[in-house]
Each structure stands twice: as C-alpha cells, then as structure tokens.
Length: 350
Image (tube, rainbow, N blue to C red; front, side):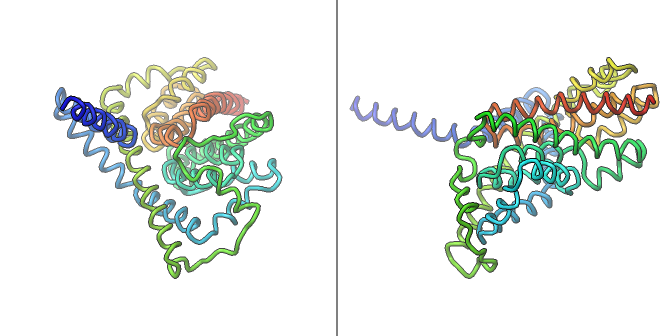
C-alpha cells in the first residue's frame, strides 16, 4: 500500500513538473489576473478587456507573419530566405537594418520570422539588426509621428531606427566572430540548428505544398505551434502592460522625463527602457512635454528606448532567446537610444 502511494505521489510530481514547465506562462498569467481581480475587481475586468483588445488588434500582423513562416517551412522556401542572409555580413546587416526600419510589421508580428531565421542558422548579427530596428518605426508610425511631432522628427526617428540596427548588428558580428552566442535560441524553440543544412544543401521549393501530405502536416503543425507560443507570451505581456498603465501614473513619467538639457536625455533613456507606453500612446505625451520645454533629444531617446523595450517586444525576445541575448538586446536599446537622443539634440541645437 505504501509503495503504491509513493508511486502515485512520484507520478504526481512528474505530472506537476511537466505541467509547470510547459504551461507556466499560462499559470503565471492566470495567477496575476486572479490576484488583481481579488483586490481590485474593476481593474481585473479592465485588464482582461485591454488584453483581449490588444490581442485582437495584433491578430492580422500575427496571422500574416505566422502564415509566411509556416509556408516557408512547408514549401522549403526557407532555404531561399536563409541564403539571402548568408552573403557578406557587412552588407547583410545593412540590408536587415534598413528592412527592419521600413517594414510594416509590428514588434510582435516579426517574432515567428525571426525564430525561423535563427533556427535555420541565419547569422545572429543580421537578425539582431532587424530585431532592433523593426519595433521603432514602420510606415504607419512614420505618418503618425510626422503628424504629431513633424516630418523632421519622424525622419530622424527613422534614421535612428536604422542606425540602432546597424550598431547592434555590427557589435553582435564582432562578438560572434570572437566565439560568443553559438546557440542564441532557448532550448525547444524553433528547430535548433538543423535547419542550417538547407542553406548548404538547398533543394527546389515545392510551392504547392498541400499536394504532399507530409508538407501539409508540417504547415499545420508549425502554424499551430507558433500561434500557441506567441499567444501565451503576448497575453502575459498585454496583461502586464495594462497593469503598468493603471498603476504607474502618466504624470510620473512626465515628471521623470521632463526638463531640458543633456541630463534629460539620459533620464528619458533610463525611463524609456522599462516604459509601459507603446509608440502610438507615447506620441501625445512626448508632444505635450516638448511644448512645455522638454528637450527634443530627450523625446527621441524616450520614444526609441520605449519602442524597442516595450513589454510585448521585450517579452517576445525573452521567450525566444537565451538570457545573454536578451541582455545584449536591452543593452543595445539603452546605449543606442541614448546616442540617438544626444545626436538629435545636437542637430536641432545647431
């Protein structure tokens, strides 16, 4: 009897560990929502509504990028994509930074493409350039920024996004050439490095993949796996974002990053890195602060730092990459945003 109980208990521990390791993100999200609902029922309902609305708004971008990634894997076109990133590293980083700064994808929508590129063995330096530049600006963000802060500011922000991608890409290239970051993806994310063989031994893509049962299964399997992966992490990100909006007053942010002078650029960078505001929500705040005398360079630093490290973008990086890659990403965001703010301040002060 005792042995049976021990076996049952041991089996329960194994099941518990399995559930925690595979569903910990959902468990943490549920615990956060339950705690908020217990102590602040109104905010609990607001956070749930905010999360649902944010997920709905990002769904078109996610479905497009997930579909492209799954289609590339099922057809074998991923080898063509990977080979496009295997030219001269200096040129590939420049192209990745430019494409990231001009692409229409949000920071969440590019995640499945980035995961696929890393899994196929595409150099981390080119992926990092794209990863850093993409959240800062896109065509719709450029138009909105120009309308709120002027074309000079919007153009400078676009150049800063590309510059941040170049800085991060070339710095990562030097580190990888020195032997760092041989395996950037977390264990169990993507397909490991096996996809790199498709670069060296490419096969003609099968565009009509649905005619082959195995390729059709791969498309469905990849799409579902990526969708579930992104959905659970973005749900947690949006729940946390809703709580920061509710409990961290915008007045505090305004007080922290307000003022003029070079010191405000540094403060704006430090506040912007963990900032809860996404790019669209931050524009009216920065516009109002600049009208009250805030240094333009501080506004630039705040927008770039906040864009690159906004909760959805940062948590997506954390979910995909190993901790040292995440630390590198945040470090580039901090130093790049500070440099962009100082350069823009010097430009407008001329």
